[in-house]
Length: 410
Image (cartoon, rainbow, N blue to C red; front, side, top):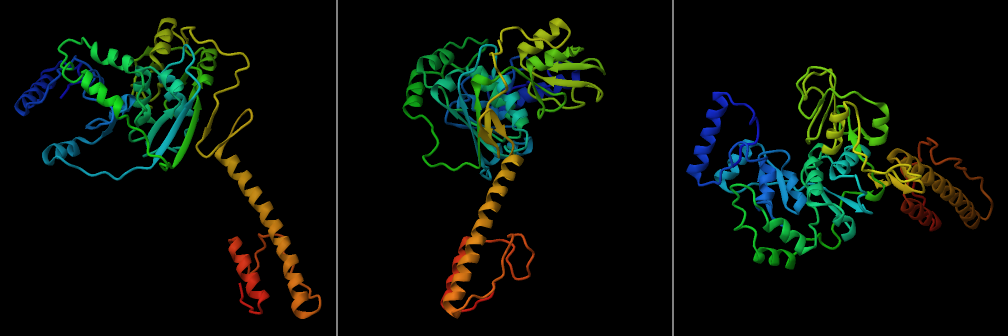
């Protein structure tokens, strides 16, 4: 159990509540981390509770952060969490799964925060709402995402609308062992959890999707084309490349912590919306810690200068989510639908024309003379006997019935 919310409140009522929680943890034999030790999700990772290929439930909506180390984390409301504690089991409806595949490698000056901010803005049609997400990609692409980048991406998928998501954990045992076994946090209890036996077992039995696994959605993002992005104002569905926002020269009144009831402010945390940062008149932006720090120093939107935009850069290459990849970028879901409809209608009109000819030939063969037949100029004519939806099997079946002398109406 850990205390990480409202820790700046030092009034007696809040401190009394904290003492009650600590007493309860001791009575239950639970490990307790007091206020100031750190954010609970971070402790879960640092202390080895979040272990790849295992499952955790936590009473916080950002429990999906554990997916950054291949650990399936999901949230439950506090009453639900209490019931799990009481009866030791629960039930879930298995959600649809969206597969997000990374290609390329992350450029210098671009962070995991930029990745998730861009994903929220580029794929903003609620396509991952109430989904589980599987982050995948080549070993080279995934290795370009450091552990803290993965954790930042995983943590903010909640704002994207997802329920949970596991990353494919990195395949470099030495790198993982170094990160896991050199933890020197004050009061750490992690050493018994991090040991060579657990690491050996982990790499011998790596978790992977089943062959032929089914997904409801496929999204792709080319990391090498990604620039630093900023989310907002006041919505993760709006993401702007750093250079565009810097060019606007927006004055920043507060960075990270709001204390004024007006102006524009930037935040490097995971959640923000209109009014949450203070006044409903304020404009809030969500960005990487680097961007927030640089903007705080300048008093206006600014970057650290570590990112160099490639020559000829025209935007982030991505596809999926109802769209289709095309030369020079991506078409939207609506544009793709229009193309599909136009193509199908053209094909259907060709079929109708061919069927007209077949019916005319059949009439000549059966009746011995040419009979004037009804010409269908368009499949959309509202004829009383014409079906509103057409299937190839309808045409074939009815033509064969007519050919054999049976007149079966539409």
